[in-house]
Length: 522
Image (cartoon, rainbow, N blue to C red; front, side):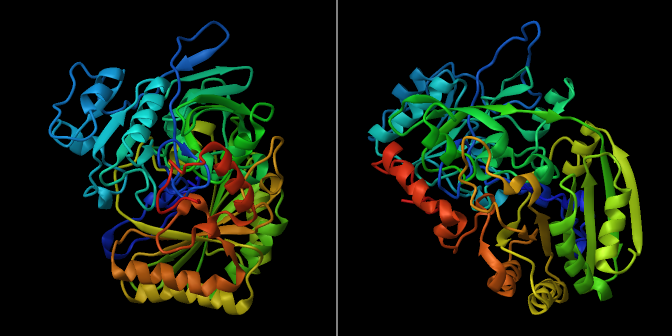
């Protein structure tokens, strides 16, 4: 929670799993994380940053998590004809991994183990932004497909590529803070960003999964508990460092290359370049009020109707996502996890109950500090690798009674088939409905919510559930969230009205279509 860039707090929301497995990764879903590639592609990206010692009046730090691999002291063995890997290895401050290199198996892994069998021709672990430039130049010269990786949470494994070059920017993660602005390398992970900012009483609106890379989340939009109060993660970006397909480094902002700046804010990575750093305008790290309400399955339709009214009418200081979970006994779990940025969620909980028309059967209210809230929503300070299948739909408006029945039926069918499944509805609106200064390519400003279809299974049953979910809400779907990209869906469905402007930016910054995968425009 988008990854929350919306891997929507499944754990905090109390999701129940079929077959004895508790679903927690949805908190790791708001990012298409494909490293640092930026632009209209369904592959989220991440990018590096520079490291600095903390000057007086400014803070800087390198997060506790470290990139696997250390600067190379010797070039890997070159075998056979083809690209001269020795030349590339010798030019890097980071490290190059080949299939014959010790550590290669771990180097190319993503968050989801289902992609472990995909074997890149090589992996570059960037140590400085210049390594990104060298990797891009090498790939272009040798006609290799290049994909970027940071946290590696892409739903479709878009941050790895068979026989291509995987560019890992996870080592570019230095952070500094001054005058309410965070400067951070694109390889930083969300928990480390929040822990760093907490020292200064500041925060960012982000997703919840602690290991998601900040770049993948940001480039695709970035939804979370602060979405309605402060907007999307991408809305807080004031500048970015980017390396384009020609190997040139750019610093983009609202006043410097504004077309590229706007294109990178909200439509995902994979098409226009590799982002190496961000500057964010931070927000106050205040206490948050939480409410958790649960209703019996018999009131499921009323809860969905009431939640839709709540998503439209609640104050912008209030956020609440709806979890409809398949239980192992064939029934449904219906609950809402809500947050008030005022620090008191009592009124918000009562308002939701009034819209539902029934008191919750279980009700919990609490108040948490900024960092305690981060840990609670993300399930801790890190997250283990986990397999899953997922997809999404963007709701253009409140669903009618027949569609609500169909949505509930899709989850119910999964429950009866003993398939772990959840429909997680995240509200939009509030500040997220407003285009930020400098422009943005996030296409869903007028939408009501995003539904994430999620299963911890990787089976035909899970695929059936996601397909059934899409069919259930088709009449009310405007498209899909690029940070929840999935196979078998038209690329254009992720970009809406932004597609034409993204295509124009693609023609300007990557006319030869160097950045291309099955999930990119162009």
